[in-house]
Length: 271
Image (cartoon, rainbow, N blue to C red):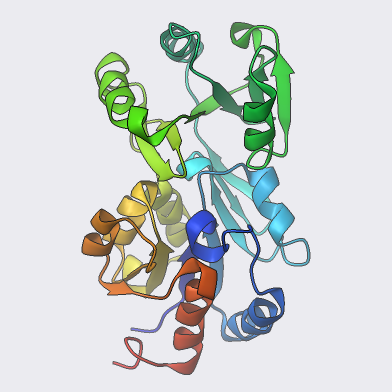
C-alpha cells in the first residue's frame, strides 16, 4: 500500500543533539513529498509554538500533533484540543505542589506556565520546549484550558515518581516518559496516536498508509498503530522491540533516511 503520511517525533529523532536538522536536505525532500501528495506530520510532547519555529517556511503546509496529542493542527488550523475540567486541573496541581522541590510546567491552550519561584535553570530549560512560557505566582490562578503538565527531574527519581502519580492521579492523568529527564502528564487516551488518528480520519486514510518514527516512551502508541514503524538507533530498547523497523542515529539524520527510502521506494517500501 502506498505511503501517504510520514510522522516523526522531534527530540532524539528528527533533531540532532544540538536541536538542529539538515534543512537543505529536508526541504528538498519536502518538495518531493508535496508533489506526491504525501503529508508530513510532526508529533511531539513539545508546545505547538515551539514546534513551528523549526519549520517557518512550511508551517502551514504541514501538520502538528503537539503536547503529546493534546493539541492538533492541520495546515495552520487547529483541529483539536484536549481539556481538563477546572476540578481536575486543580486536583493535579494540588498533587504536584505537595512536593516543594518538584518543578513543573502547566501547559494550556494559550501558553505554558511556570512558578515564579522555580529555579532559573529550570525555567531556561523549559523555555527551549515552550516558546510561550509565563511565570505565575500561583498556578491555581491560571485562566486557561489546561491539558498537560511537564516535569523534569533526575532519571534516578523518575520510576518512583511515575509509580506515585499513576496511583494518585489514576483516571485523570497518565505519566509518560519522553527522555532527557522529562515526564509528561497526559490526559488518558490523548497521546500521539490519538492525534494522528484525528488527522488520518480527516484525510480518509488508514494507519497502513502511515510511517511513524520515534525514540522514546511517548512514541509507543504511534509506533504500535502503524505498519511502517521505525525506531531510531538511539531509541530505548523497549521502543526498538516495539517498532517493526530501525533506522540510523538522530545524530546522523536517521529520520531523513526513512523519508528518502519512501521517496526512492526502497526497502521496506518496495513491496
